[in-house]
Image (cartoon, rainbow over all chains, first blue to last red; front, side, top):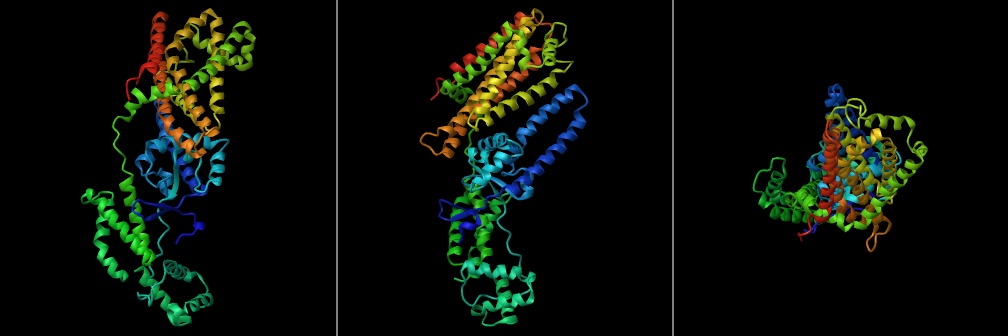
Length: 226
Length: 316
């Protein structure tokens, strides 16, 4: 059902079903990092404006700086289901290698190791490591036994509205069903000729060609997603 | 079986699981294991019978969430930090006594060698520390300074924040740098030893600053130096596990070592934080006789020594 090309990771549970996880690549993770850093800088500079006046204020400021710099990702990952604010926004999530939520140990280790990943500048080591690893793990992930995955499974095809739900005349394999849904999903973006040409291919299923076939495909798709 | 019939038959089960997994769970959570097994069975059936992708996707999402809920539940480990501090941490330090010895030799060796050099040939001090900085240190520790060891009039709280931010972060970086073969941890150790050696020797040559300096550093030094050395030990161990993983793959060796050294990293950070507390609120306190400071400082060193040799010995 899954081919090796789509980068999904199969997780076999004790109950004998396989669950799929999709590791997230460097680009999306860099965006999440940028969001986090931006938020952190904003809140720190706002706080500096408030506390910067007195000596004691600057002391508290430095304490907050320490706790937020090292603690922000850890606290959010442990209590926020593996998501810092940036990761939440980008639809990413940190999980253990076995797909379970991260705990204190994993989160502390992977975030301490950020320092090593940051070297020599702007996550050079981390990027290099991610490109070599099949699951896009940076050094911290390797040491802590974690990985970053996409939180939501690939978006479900939108409900097909413009067809009368109709059952299939004979069962299709999941791959064939997927192909059918993909076609119907992409159909609005194809030219008329191309659409009809492709619909012709489904003649064994629809017992028709051209517009008749296309209409039937829409009905089947509506039946599948109903 | 038709898909619609299948859906009808199991809709109640899926709805029940959805309710249990919601942010505000409703229903009896003890039922989850049984329901989850039933869900896995329906997922397998749906896949095998080739039901529509939207249904299998939905069941898959549900199964993944239930799997996490069920197997991700943390075992309750009350007071794990206390267990680490009373037993795991000192035992770990004793287990790693060889690396601790090497790290201590590097730190104290670098400090002592450079210190002696500066003691006999003071002009060498300028090779490592700029004249402005040396003058600054001299001002900080001369008797006239209102607060020892500070420039200007930094309040206690501000210095506490600064020491925490600066020193504990150095400890964390020293550990993390260890993964690059342990070399950055060694460099950090040698550099800090060298810097301390130059300053200590420079200030000791002048009778005006000698007593002020030593009575200032002796107390928090016990915690700070030990914390730094232990951070380096943890970092070196991490680097070594990468260089010579033994009978494990490099990845597994790293995983194991990191888990094992974590109590030491946390312990070292706590020691450094303790040092910051003493440095900010005790060491700089004016109007205390140096004899008192030496006594407390000696006590601190004895305490550290006793902790790492005796704590956690009688526990299995």
